[in-house]
Length: 467
Ligand SMILES: Nc1ncnc2c1ncn2[C@@H]1O[C@H](COP(=O)(O)OP(=O)(O)O)[C@@H](O)[C@H]1O
Ligand SMILES: [Mg+2]
Image (cartoon, rainbow, N blue to C red; front, top):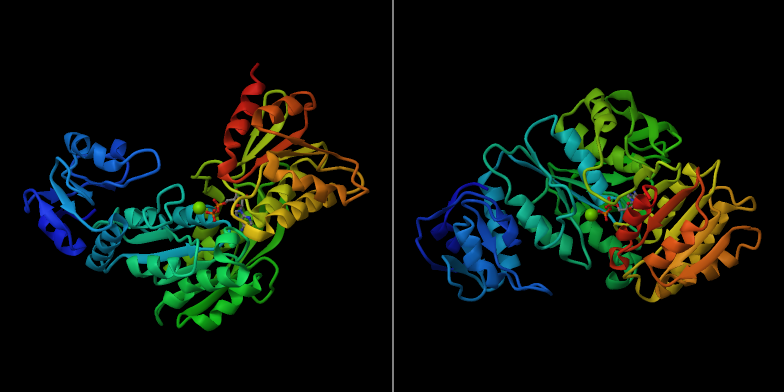
């Protein structure tokens, strides 16, 4: 962060100072007391399990200059009415103090983190870039990310998430983006939003926030996203795999035997070959979005293509593909799940397992609201259709937990699918079922919402091979 005296922090946040007004915060701003570093600021937040205020003194003992808190603590502090509001004010102050920093925001229902990580690895070729691994996309993570910026920073590549209308507009006030990427409108959190029209309204707030000299980078393949062109003053640049009219496109998309796409990147500035190290065809639009953003920031097509081909997965549990010593392949995609991302993962499974047997171990998709049951049935049907009458690509569907059970009803609608569909209560039971079935050459996909906690199952599956 840029060095700020406590007096300034109190002024910017409208807080009350307890301590030396000239003491300077020069280190990181964190909400986890274990991450406190020398000269940093510890923001105390009351969570479900612990209250940060209890760690105020420890944070200062560990080197923090002060604590941002909502009630008195035994440490130098700035007392504010609400911590996220204070972090937002501080982040906005820092952005305004650094006019040379170019701010890009990325939103969408699926693929924000993957695209942000790809884009960061391209934009880093242009200059110092802030874009931490992981999601950091909400009222806490977003300002904390912005606060990493200092005088050396040239680019901020930010992930913007929403669980309701107004959230993205708020994040865009915290760090006004000049570049905005909208990936897609899907069912993630659709229950909380109250339907896809509301999701569209919310994601389009990024397009609305862009200034006339900004650039809106929109997915031409998603009609709801493309229509956001009418909601922005910014210049519009499109990307798409299907739409031949998109400015940034992919031709000759192929997947290798582990599902890694290669394609020719077509841009207004020329074309170049790309071979991604990420798995799954859904990463092609993500890569195009990242290339379009980097291109607008000044990276040439050769740099875009080289950067995409060199880019690695920076954030965990998203389509991690591991081959066990016994020849079983495990796809760990247990970070989150919604109808679009489960379909993408099943497609990837079917590709990897096209010459063998695929098993989809699916937990429930959370936060779908009224459509939850129907959505699970539809995914079950989709999976069985992918398996087809030969069962190639999908030999088994294992629904983990009660809420995932409607997957099976959906799969049974596809009478021609010869595969096995069964329900198990938890990850351990899924492991037992798989242990009796897996043979060399098989491929297992593990996917669920984080709430289902299936990332442990994927880890156990990988251990299994070493027994
Ligand atoms: N463009 C996409 N379309 C559909 N599904 C996707 C896309 N990109 C990623 N996914 C799926 O969503 C999961 C989460 O990806 P992530 O990049 O973390 O998205 P987000 O940050 O939006 O939650 C991935 O593991 C993958 O299964
Ligand atoms: Mg994310």
